[in-house]
Length: 239
Image (cartoon, rainbow, N blue to C red; front, side):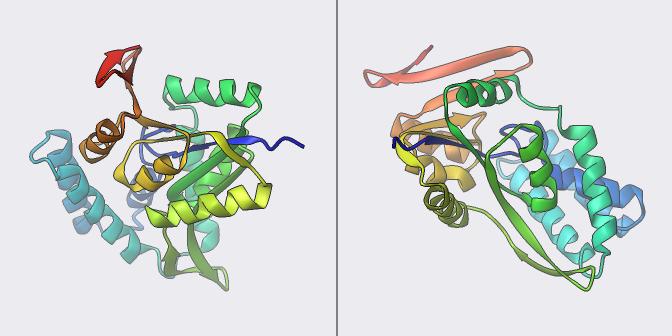
């Protein structure tokens, strides 16, 4: 029996146009479940990123948000967290990139086994995976005991994404030949490196440098235009 090839997608910034857990933090803030003063400092860091104050402004903003997120979750009701996640999914599930949305449909029709691997909480990713008919998924896990979040978490990033991908390949007895991976950040690097075909989608500068060094396909989507850059004869050309 011929094994089915896989295609693995990152979610935040690759399929969804925004970062899902950032949206969760915004909802929690609106519901006054996050310290307002600390949240304002996160919003200022977000403005620094949006106005491109430094090359590392996004990383600085993201780290400040993660820190606040981690301070807020311990003791929170699982029911409340799930309700917030459902609200975020309802608002953001259709706010996706055309390229990756259509690629999911195309690969599904061509017999690929579709995987989603994301650093966002599994309470978010499971809904996205179901909505876009992924065959399986892995996401970050937030521990719950007696109906409340403890604050302990297992985050999928870098090598952790790679290990989960290997687990899924083994679980479903998938073919690595013809495999495809698509991601947007350095955290997707090892996952991309495993695939026969790697696609760096709207890559952050750190991933862009790795992609060009490896001759991977680069896809940029801006407004309603998609640019595909292919590496041929030692240089990139517009496909």
